Length: 116
Length: 113
Image (cartoon, rainbow over all chains, first blue to last red; front, side):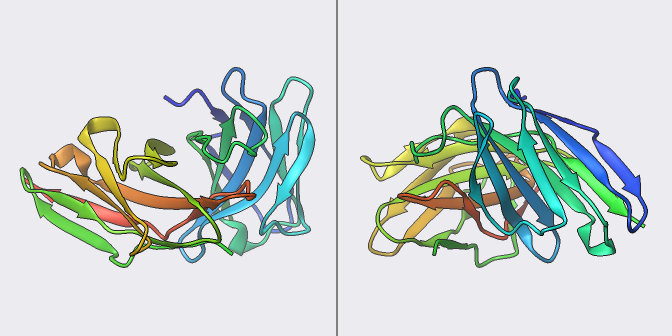
């Protein structure tokens, strides 16, 4: 158990809908990272937050957004969902903002999203 | 840009035999290299990382990895594979100045009893 928690574990929804994925980092970790894992794209970095502020952006669609709250938990919002958004969404956390490039990112169990 | 190549889709090995999972990377500057393992319906578990120093890195569950700068490789090894090692293995790299991890496509390891 990495100490990173994600809810829900599974999510089934319809095209055009909006969902929110939640992540709580390990105790003491200030950075949260979101990744998408799909069969065709593999593991793709989406976005990073550090202590409430956006730090880095990857291949995140405009329909997707994220935020990190004062208690350091993070939410990933996915809107206008399409079939191709079906994937496993992982959250990871690390101690600092990532400038310690040797830092390990610890991953949560993921949220499996199925868009029908 | 930073990237990782894991050339084999699946690695089959008999229980008790040595296991090797290959990884090559491309990054500007010094690489920071990581191996993760993913069991079915589970998240990624950290195995080991290379930052600097000794080219042979030891990690969890008896795994080790060898960093080779000239060949830009970071192969994962285990001297004697167990059936319970059957899982999906990911190599990842991060270059200096870059927060994000770039992952390879993963290698499915199947350990045959």
